[in-house]
Image (cartoon, rainbow, N blue to C red; front, side):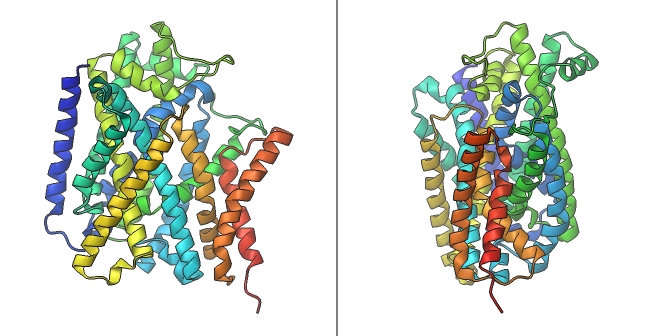
Length: 484
């Protein structure tokens, strides 16, 4: 694929985004950046959230991880669906009842100011790492496909992406992102469908034959019943429930979009639709992964493995085959998908980080319009720098990024999950000043327990570290409850 073609695709795609930004920036208010003026069509929000949830991680990591983890990730997806039901019928009614802009202000009403600041701070850390790791994956592929041809250093590639994101988000924020995310979702799904059709055609298979090839493949092993494995069904399923609640329902990024819907029922329709389409799309990407490995084997394309037969750098499988082997149409659709992933990885995350920090720590709601604009721009720039630093720190990492993201999430979202579950399902009053200590100790103890069980009993917590983390947080809150 020529550099000129790649550059043209990037320019055209970004031009479309800027047109959307211009149209959505008209008639904006002071609150447009943060709430979208609460006028977003629910079906548009639902479709756009799929792209934000998928990002480059699902787009690239999920197909590649099939080689080492079979179809076990689908156990996690099944748990996600249950988690979204909790979000729809428990969390969203709570948020709408309180008319929240930052969802963490609930903690201030329930527990106190220090708990509120602690919850928001854990989100800021979680979202910064999550956004950076998602951007890292997409930026590496763009570097490989385009910027390497001009010998441009990787750090400059990341700066260019962040600068482009700033150009279309700084005016209307979430009001623009609701629309751009919908376009990004379309290109992500299109790339997967085009690639599947191209592989099926190149292997001279009918649709029924391709389905048969997938379901009878050795990687189509969906359920793992080994209790000590990190891929055990119960661990993956329960973790899927809890991580969905934490990374979606307790995440300002995802909930900020949902709260732009006109009313509670629209928001609930949005979440239910989103959860079902997301599960089907993730299943599609897992099936694509098997087809990619079949294609590589059929065409004698060697894939790097270690001495134990484990595939290395599985995140490069899809990019390598799409750009270099399957054909120009697949290469173009893949590039459009990864460009979409690059922007969707970071635009809404930066908006959510800005919203949370300005509302939770700078109390922007009581500022003048000019102060709001100035502070918003400063914070947006500041978090862009934070994301850039994290990307560079992890720039040499190998393996599938999606496992790393969920592992980190288990430690950073665990205290948030514990705080909300304790707050919603008990009436216990706690001593607010001890909450920061508890929320720091819980992840540390989780890590120590994980290492202990792994080293002494060969027992892998897997993604279940979020459950242990939340349970330790709840235990700590019980210990510091106020005595009558």
